[in-house]
Image (cartoon, rainbow, N blue to C red; front, side, top):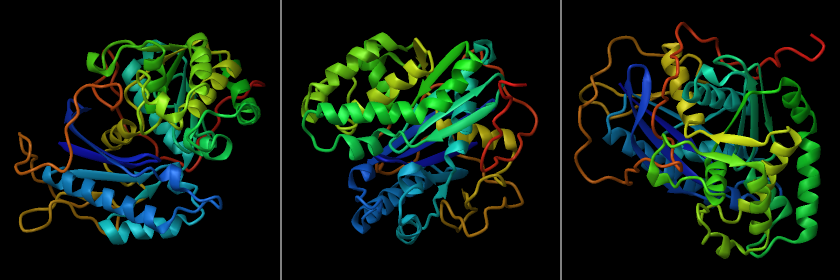
Length: 392
């Protein structure tokens, strides 16, 4: 089976195509198209029409690529930058009209639950009680659990792109007052969630997302060319120094640092502040970097659910002979009847993107020594239960 996930995020549209082997999604192809939505959001929270059209073009290219690879299913969603846009419905309609795809908009807590699911499968149950941190462009996801699913999950408005726009605008060196206000805001926003995580005393803390991967590389973690199975960790003491270093440089100078990409050089100071303040307020000395995150969580949920009834938007499916490579309509329900078998090799013809090798910058690899889930997963709720409370 060949499955695809299309992630319309703050910086890029990322298509991940995976082959399912033994119930595990293994990466086959990855395609990224830059859109930089986070940098174009207006003061009133709207996404400009030009940016929405650019997003639609990138989504259309990703859909075409998924069709070339003859994917059996294509799950497409937009993250916080679209979810929180003041003109969200207009943006989604522009994408639908320009690409033929209806992007799902997942609640932040559901994103956290799916990301936790992927991280838990990667590190395994032997990690014990586990906390999860994920810094995106628009939000920070935090989750904790003792099993395959989280006991609680939160989504906070602490994304690196959002905070850069609000506190550290421009491409120069961040101002001291802006950094001071940013730290105060992050501490206040994290206060209650941090207290809950401290009380749970997780044995393992896992960090996902490109932002954490780049910060870990900046602080000395192995480069992506060493592959996804190399253990990568990020210490709070190293991160504190990274915050100071990033704050002394312009955006162009940050892009020259190890691990910091040109696409995220403007967001790096805000992302580092959020990461450091989260670890400090939660009493976390070190996090383990996990290459699996939300995209893999979507695939795992689909594989464990046995269908796509839980997905809040149409799922594009491979049709039979005479039809387009991928099609989908208003109904999100599954079709009856078998699907055509996927090909054994890559598609013919030119590619609209480039394949990526093993890298901590992309979701690659498979878990080692992790138990596989069995049975049927419950439906994804709009908000997850918070689990046990300190008084229990």
